[in-house]
Amino acid sequence: MKVFETELPGVLVIEPAVFVDERGFFLETFHEVRYAGRGIPGDGLRFVQDNHSRSRRGVLRGLHYQITKPQGKLVRVTRGRVFDVTADVNPDSPTFGRWVGVELSDENHRQLWIPPGYAHGFCVLSDVVDFEYKCTELYHSEDEGGIRWDDPRLAIEWPVKEPIVSAKDARLPTLEQAERRWLPK
Image 1: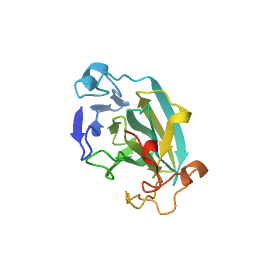
Image 2: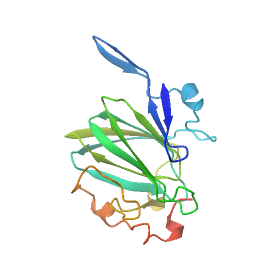
Image 3: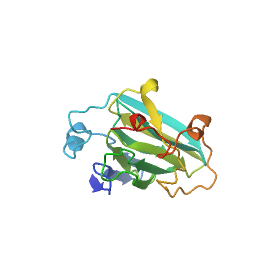
Image 4: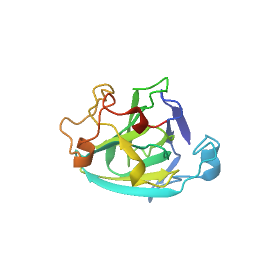
């Protein structure tokens, strides 16, 4: 397994070892000891919930986070291709307002580790995508927060011009509009 740091502290791109032969391929999607050696999930955290979403081309989900019970996420694509974004929306962070974008696909087998406290979203680049998350905190609907996908402060370079966004995501505030108490710490 190869692990690459990004410009956001703790956000890591993981390239698992993939064993390919005439039958197909095999890879470990998580190995507690190996991942712990790279600090995943780290800081006494453990994975407590797995999620799976399916979306179609042009769908953009995000940017989401939990406010007081932040989730660390180990994400990957099992079918299709996405542009995955992690954004630092913590106003006390030295990297506040910066983001990292990574292509994840069923072909490159990459994973992304997103420590608790970051906002996360992705847009679908293939006809269909199956997206899986391992989370370090249970989902709490009353604790969810988010920032608009097209926030001018973040200026994320999404590879879709007119994404399909949920009504809820379309109502999310920009960083400028968000009250500090509704941003992750």
